[in-house]
Image: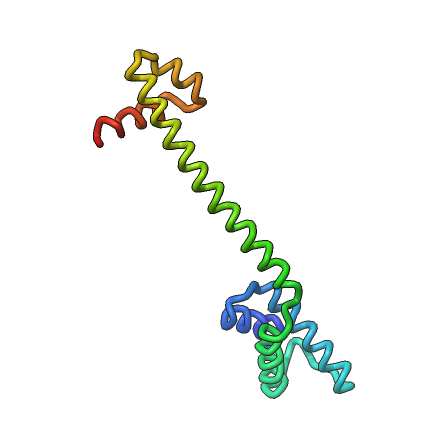
Length: 134
């Protein structure tokens, strides 16, 4: 089996990016070659070496975060911010829609509402029609 096929197999099995799997397999092969003072043909990896590489790859996912913990912490933080901002955006949209309907009921033209809100005319009508359907 060649190195790229092995890396793709590991990427699929462990649900990681093919790029990460390829770089990791290259690193593992390099470590094996240095420690074992041998050479592994990346175009024809024997089954024994492939099995060892697969085990080392799986262990690295559990034991070595490769900077993932910092990225995970950042993802958690950004995702929380996004949820908060989305909730705020939803509230603002509700308030805007209420104002659109109130302006309409108080005689404001759709053109004036479009100009004030930045919405397009079809969106203003959609907001107004939603109120009628409810």
